[in-house]
Image (cartoon, rainbow, N blue to C red; front, side, top):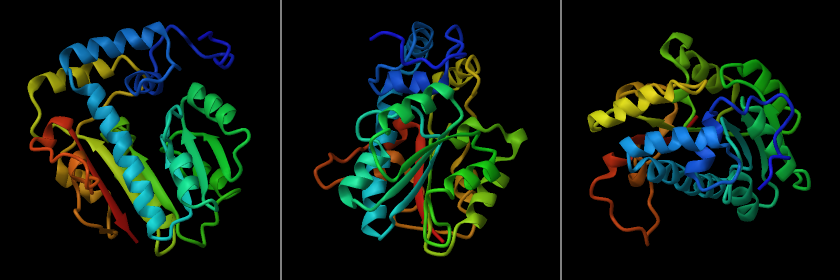
Length: 264
């Protein structure tokens, strides 16, 4: 495809985490510099694309679960570039009155999201850093009613916030902002059970503007605060409510990420 989808002012010479992710998901919205970095990472961690896809499949399963629990409002922070089967498609198919707000810090992700959603009612896109909770809530409240339950989705985003920026405080601010009956979804990369090459791939991620911080299960679980984790709790991604037809994954740790959903 051509590059007429690229917003003005975007630096095409520096890789972007959102575009690398898009590449791994089989999307078309990435540059040669993104593909080059993705291929370097993939050479050292051959299952990285499977990990990315597994995270997206988990998100789809979780959105269907949340709709079944009566949730009709979704705040997807760190949403990336929309690819097939994104949150709005799953939610609106399951419940036509669902409302979805996407938030991302990457202008390419945001501009393309807006183009895709231009004719989709009850959706909005916000350009904001995940750490800027006040701005996110202020913009999201134009569509979402924060007096009613909201599902906040933090799928594969908290590992982009370094320890020095206190991700726990960011998540606590989000937890405090939503009413009882709301849900918090988190998936997060980990070094638990991982071989040394995963750590090297983490170092390579530092070439983008968003380096990955791998965290252990206990630290990730603490992000849920006083929310109650739904079964099966915080588990490696393939073990979170797999569909009945899914084969049993005997080595879910190879995905290298945990997932959980909790209720306020």
